[in-house]
Picture 1 (cartoon, rainbow, N blue to C red):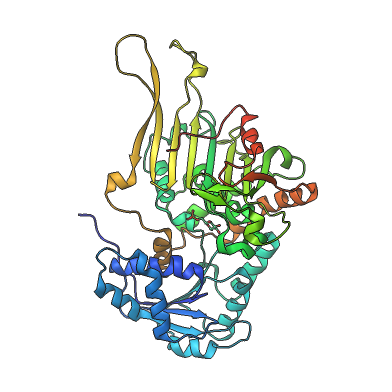
Picture 2 (cartoon, helix red, strand yellow):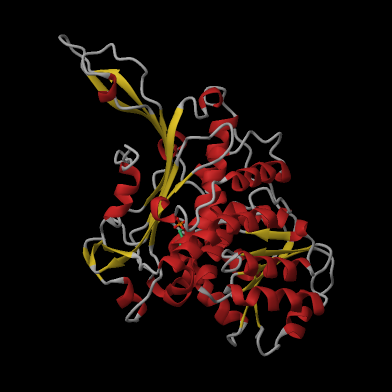
Length: 490
Ligand code: BG6
């Protein structure tokens, strides 16, 4: 029988932004699932911290309500009770400098692992880190976990990294990119480095191009004020999508040790061909959704969603990126992501080169190239599209069919949420799936010139109807190169 999850040492986790959306929607359910998996040791505590005055009972009740949906059927009442008993709350007002004494008193002696999770807006990263330092809360066994986005640009990221770095050593800073905790993203590494089949053909001699799509059906929901400041390039490309690109393009690391992995990703980020005012028009498309149809009903425009009359914030981006090294020279990486697209799915599609010579009736150009699809979500799995002969007598008729491995069907168990893995890794002090400072800053060095080029061009984002695949220019971006976005993603 496969071994179960390894228990983690007792810890205190303090969640700043402890009554916020991220905490209720992602963090507490993830922690509850780890409780259900019996992964905690005693005594472990989870302390919510935010401005709202709330007592412990009221906090426990609101967490209970929030996690109810993620409970197993029938609910495991004992474990739920055990989980709720771990919860405590302290009101901390970072701006008004209130509540730190109470937090200190609650945490007590400095004798075990502490993790401070900053599930707050990025404007609070620096003040919280500074307070943790000045209040003597950054103990030797403490770690700090920060959510993306780290800054709005390279300079902002460096300022945040400096401020946090003045209080915590780099080994104690865990910068979350939750895509790195997704099961299928982990599997990409297994696929590449636990098999011999792919590595010899994983290069420009055999691969024609790569597509990475992260499509969402939702609009900006309640996050308008944040999103209006961010836009899709900062919200999705600077982090999640570039990390996916790195995992596809990186050289084999010499081990799974954190720095070995992160060194290889960093090399990819440094090899990206810059996109700036000279080539942005040919290599980027940005869009903003207008009213349309989504998820079976009428959908408002972005401007209606944020309640403004005008905005240049993009809710869709498509990019054509080159990786300037021996392995990838000449292989374009096409990235696209957007809100209010027709389907929610994320996938990496690797297209191999076409057959070099036609021996079948249809000419070689008519034979679709092999494609490897790594489906990140939903229905995580791997598909390898191959040509086979259609059964039956008569002419040799070829068909493009997938070798299809769905993880749910193969392993008969649901995949864990990314936050479950990442929270446990941070508590254990394993930074492999977190972004190192230099990676974050290198990613901004690629992103900043794109933003500059866009703002200098003075062109607004192109409109697209909610429920469509983005502006027509995104289709033209790839079709100009004689390629198409993968449509075989069911
Ligand atoms: C977040 C972005 O990082 O990722 C959101 O801020 C986006 O805008 C989300 O919706 C997508 O995550 P997932 O796991 O649902 O693909």
